[in-house]
Length: 459
Image (tube, rainbow, N blue to C red; front, side, top):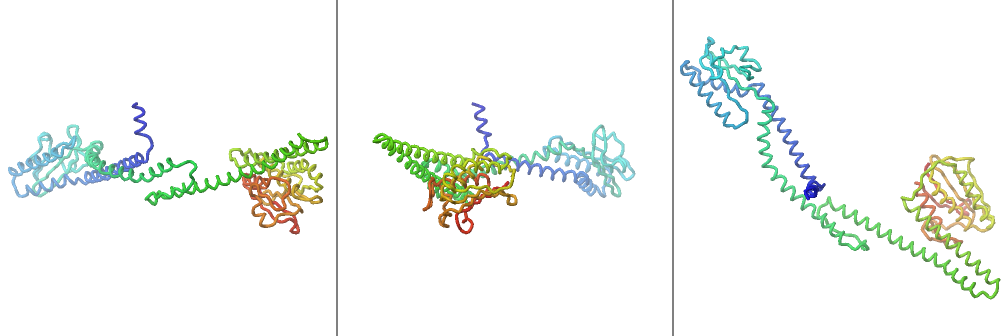
């Protein structure tokens, strides 16, 4: 229970942080004031300000009197000064010592503790420190026509000086602390009230409600928080709308091959002869292939849109990979009567994510083969363009009108003259290109015929 209470007291909170900063600031103020007061004390000691004032005042008081009167005046002055020092209640403070000498050097008066001491000489009384009976004193000598007044003050060590100085500051600090912390605590608490209102509003909100908060947090410094949350809700709402549309389109695309397979399965069940049964089986097989291809593309697009699924880069010969794609797709190109060619250097080493590169090559080439009529040419071109890798697939097929090129990378978009396919190929290409940090663009082919797809990847 005690540990839990302690954790609650020291847990990181904004109010606690402000309080700790305030305490640290007050500590720095105390240190700075102590340094200033200590420097002032040392300066007054080096200049003997207090001793000089006491000696000069005493010299004025005994000027023009004889020895019988001067001694009692010095004694009374000593008592007055020391009574004042003791009244200050400073710990460790000691009495001043006085010695009054006549002009010829005779001792007229001396404090009780130094009566056995000889008259202090000029050199002794004007030194920095004076050692008497194992105790250090700061001396001061003042001379007039008739008198020599020596005043001795016990040396105060640094620790005692700091104790004196800090005592007064700590007293003031104890008084100032509540006067500073309570208003500051109240200001922080009331200042955080709008944030607490924001938290309660978010906690009470339905998870499906993505409408803007439109809260007024009162303070201009806090208002950007609401703007950031509203912006996040707007993006989440747009993303959910896109995902809902994506699911609807995927369901629509899958419904067609499933419906076709269902029709062919019915035809197979009631086929009047072997010829009709074989046709039904072929129809089912084509439906299965189309559905499988669509599912594979959906999974590929989902992997590319998941940042955590990014594969590791590796150095490889990109020309070899392009050749292999050409070899894999040559049977499809031959079946459609399309010439498929590769234009590239003999070798091109680069560090790249191969799974994303394969997605780009396969979908670009398959799109061209699916949309070009028999007798067309499809060229895959690979080259270095400065510090970028340029991949181009150029065909002389029907191409895309400009208004369709603007939407060609949308998922499930299919133009008016679209051939077989699901409308996901270019969307996969764009997502794979973005993953590799590149750009993809569409343009008419040579002589404004066909389509040129250009992918630029940094290497």
